[in-house]
Amino acid sequence: MSVLIKNGTIVNADQSFQADVLCADGKIQE
Image (cartoon, rainbow, N blue to C red):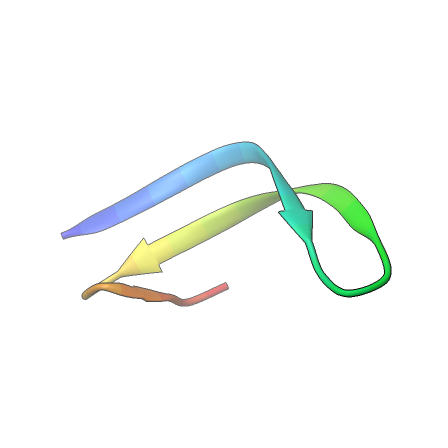
C-alpha cells in the first residue's frame, strides 16, 4: 500500500519546507 501526502511540512535539524511525501511498504520513499 502506498500513501502520498501532498504539500506536507518536512522538518530537519536546520530547516523546514513544504513538499510531497511518498510512503510505501512502511517506509518513506521520496
